[in-house]
Length: 112
Length: 112
Image 1 (cartoon, rainbow over the protein chains, first blue to last red):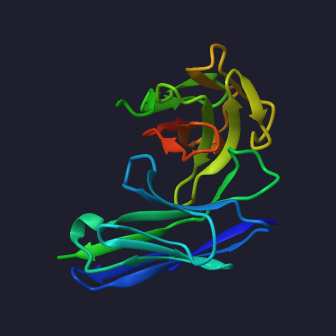
Image 2: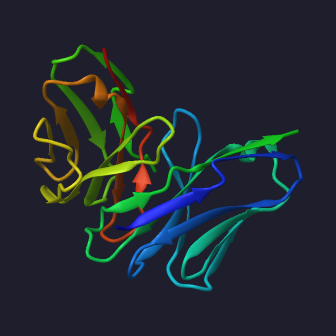
């Protein structure tokens, strides 16, 4: 069964304290791995798509990396406005284009 | 341009009642998806439309749930004989075929 596991469930950082969020997946033949940010009461906001092991993408203080078994979302010198829940999702072959499988998310809190 | 819009933003109903949730996708996006998100969980896939037809409805939990997209644009998710367990945030997303999914703000459904 295709699965996505995110860790930690919650992470508290001081402003400027860099860290990483983990997304491990078990799926045969990954078609894409997606990172979204979700603020309370809002829908997920797209951040990155990664397709193959070794791929990296960056946006401001965020960098996403991908291996054959997991992805990391690195947050460098975070600010309070980076506080949100970060969701990871995978798209597997055989499923329809709609069948994104999400993890439960990591809730990040950044204190000033 | 305008993003995905969903109405209503909140819906409170009584057990056993019928509800309709509406999604207006991004203009030009032929693919439309419905997900359900319970508290503390990631979004769970329900159904995917390509144009007017449901390409994958494998995520619908039972026959009380039905969705339509008659003109290939706006979609309506319909829930009959609502149960307390149906309480969740219902998210809609749209995309170009095979491209990134962009989410709306969601409809929070509460069944009393």
